[in-house]
Amino acid sequence: MTSAASKSVIIVGAGHNGLVCATYLALSGRKVQILEARDAVGGGAATCSFAKGYKVSGLAHILYALSPRVCADLKLEDAGLKRGETIDTIALDREGQHLTLGFDEAAGAGLSPQDSEAYTAFMQEFRNYASALEPLMMNKPPRLKDMDRKDLFTLGKIGWKLRFGLGTKSMREFLRVGGINIYDVLNEVFDNAPLKGAIAADAVIGHHMGPRTPSTVLTYLTRLWGETQSRQSLPPGGMGQVAQALFEAATRAGVVVRTGARVQKILVNDGKACGVQLQSGEQLDAAIVISNADARITFLDLVGTSELDAMFAQRIHTSRARGNVAKLHLALDSLPQVPGLSPQQLGQRLLIAPDMRYVEHAFNHAKYGEYSEHPVLEITIPSIADPSLAPVGHHVMSISAAFAPYSLKQDWAQHRDLFSDKIIAEVEQYAPGLSAQILARELLTPVDIEAQYNISGGHWHHGEMTIDQSFMMRPVHGAAQYDTPIAGLFLCGAAAHPGGGVTGVPGHNAAQRILAMGAGL
Image 1 (cartoon, one colour):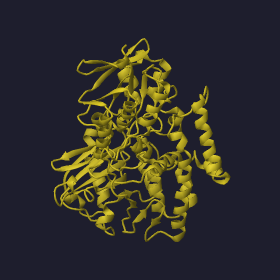
Image 2 (cartoon, rainbow, N blue to C red):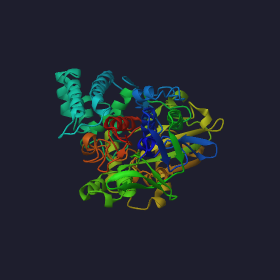
Image 3 (tube, rainbow, N blue to C red):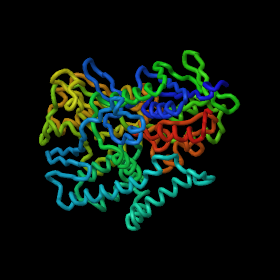
Image 4 (cartoon, helix red, strand yellow):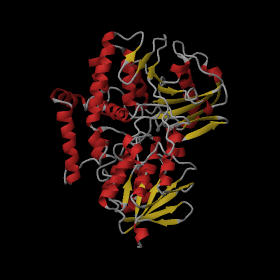
């Protein structure tokens, strides 16, 4: 193998983590090529047109959690990254007594001074817990046996953050609540039902969980950790603008990106990845292959079970990765009206989760293969801040709806209109006349997300982020430090630690792991 060939890297998938990983490796001198099946980069962080003249962020529609370290290292602002104005969360109320949940303050007509003060204290305390996870999140997760020096160093930093960063009292409280459910914790702290409903929704949306499910405090902390990285905003041009900045940074570093190039197989020779075969039949050699795809696609589809240990293949097969969120896009002929909200407030993140019982009942349907009769809804109207997303005077509405299970008892094809109608009817309880404003609509069920975005089960996070599928167990034992049982094959996407969200951290961590190992040299 020539010197140039020995440094060649192929990355499967040009989602945001693939672009991040590629740029780091290219800056280190590797020759990197990304192969993307779709016609555009960004994966779920892309802007798409769903009706003539109407554009919206395809899956991820709110920017938050993007790592400042990644932004600085890759000079993303120089590459065109624009974050947009910071937005708050507004928990909608049918009587117009909406709650505004800011970074550390909450306000609303129905909120008592006690709950307002409790919110500030709660957010400060829980963000401190989340910040204590920083050494774990920004490094490869440490093994619990056969640890190397890096693992020991990471554990030492986590211990220091917990013991001395939090203090004895807070550390003990963190250890008490870390593995329990968000329902009990919120009942201990707050009286206001809508406030508890909004926080509980943040803990469970995107997961197969209700507020009473154990470890929902952990999923809430991972969200809060994202908020310690960057505040939530609606980027101008949609999330595709973020993907474009990542693409620009990658190409500046020398990365070659091929779209419309679907990888059919990861080639393995004598237990080592040596390249890929495209659907067209073209074969490409590489010293290392990095997959930004989820674990099931990577190992079961692209590698194949014949190259894997049977127990490892079984762990991948039984990992939980079935989506529970649908995405509804609406083209509107005018701005919706929500009594009690100004046009500026309509441009914030709107949430329909009136109380924790509502959220739990919405989840109950998913346990039995049913979509929610009254779903939990996260709503944005990005055209308020960026009128270019719709024709003059018109608007687009983007709705994430939970719970909508991948494995529906009935055929989704027969129920997509019914579920769309339920979502619209629910929103119309707060925005009267909405249905008459709709010119076009598009529903993406988890089945559609699987087909259009090449994600197994249509799960946005490439797998549940429960405690048994997180950290040193993500995606499964045997592939939790970005390298895999196949020599020369690595993971860099949301299936790897620390999981989903537009953070860029899995891509960053994977690149650092590969460079530390000297892989491909």
